[in-house]
Image (cartoon, rainbow, N blue to C red; front, side):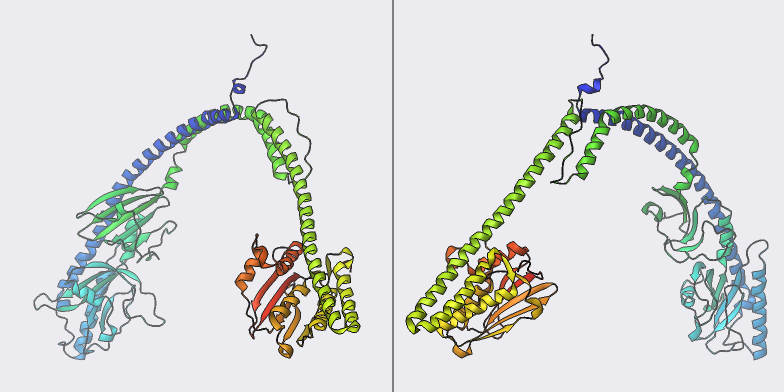
Length: 611
């Protein structure tokens, strides 16, 4: 038998251990919580929805009763002899018209005052008076006032023709203005019952009866229902809100701001059936209970938030919570075991990996008394970091040596080339003229050699490079007796700027050979320097007739494997500048607008140390 208890977890790998912990902790807890909450939610939602369905039906019957009451009063007004005999064009004298106006006003006021314990409704009659026979009657209709109003064509309300087109059928309508809006006019917005008054015996329209403040009467019925944090909407058949009762609006029976907009409903709740009926739709966030009446073209909608309802099932959730706590206790014991044996060393390893930077000293590998995957992982990562440091140092040294070798090769390419051309010039000049001119050329050659060597420096000042270029130009003038002009435009502030040695001479040589060589006094070479946004740009311009090929020059400068026959002069300059200062600097060529070529050197604005 074994001396002690062997944990079965040591016989499986780290991946299998993590999977086992996940299955033991998460799956049972998830299943129990999900099942318990789902069943509790479904039971609560269905019970509450059934209750609200019945409440909605009763509430709609109350509202329908109020609207039916308004309809009956409107029918009474419709049949009243005083209203049926009203004819602005045929009424008698002014005195008779005044009496008719007073009797109509008293009649409408009497119906408006019969409210009892309910909110008051205001009955108003709007009559079209094209001859202005009732000009003495004021035309200032208000939503909180009953009366009879005679109007001219220009004063016709926007809803008047709509009501006439209904041919005596009454309907509910949101009215923004009882009369054409005017500046400073009081708010006339109201939910009104509108019905055209027609002549019974002769036909034709007498006017339109408008019963305003209907929103207050319907609001009374809506306030009899208590929906915690819910919203109640009374809409037309197209889901346009006629009035509503919102949370926190207790005692407020005025027309709500939501009136007039279209209520967004789920597709199942938005569609109404061909007859009266109720339906409910339960979404993720709300319960919608809708009662619709196709005959009245109206709907009553309850929108109940589920959040408030689900808070009421605390008892069921408390039982599920106790089950969850028991599972949590078991899971906690397992987590503590894995934490000590697995997570602690992994956390230390993560801390090391996040702080480690290539090249930084690697601390001693933590002592491990384990041979599982974690121990092997920790040791391997520390060893890998040390090997990476060695590779970084090796690559750094190799990069330095490579750059030094490249620079030496580039300088070795240029110096023999220059020396050969210079000695050839001295030879031909001496053969043609004698000692005086040769002495001058030897003097200029000594300047060239002195600056080319530069005591081993690779970067010299722009002033020194200009002296080197000037000596080269004088040698060429002695040799060929060129008649071209040279313009120097170099600001004094830039003459101390650092530049790789032997940079300008090859470019000036190209400007002479390929530009102004055969132009005599018409030839011109300009060397200019300027500073732009921290960069120094040196331009060597010639007015030669030969147009450059920027595309071919670009390939020569940037091709990694150029053709040996293409030459190495300007490529040499471009590479040396980039080796010293970086990829964003170098040499570029362009055509000169007036004719000729411009070679531009881009350098950083740095001073040369060691001059």
